[in-house]
Length: 80
Image (tube, one colour):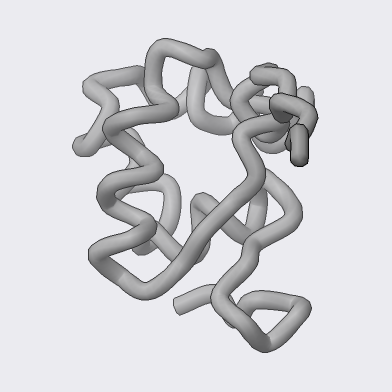
């Protein structure tokens, strides 16, 4: 299983996310994609936004988090 670089469960790369989810085969099964598609995600450093909710929920079950930007989503600005 992938270890978070920051030590707090926060993953920073697509490769770390794939590892935390159990590897390529597990990600392929989770998302219903092909091996080539999953390999492309590592090479492109991003996942399709349509898989954010699914993958984020699975990561949280395993004690991990990852920034939404890994799915090409913008982070909202915090207002006070």
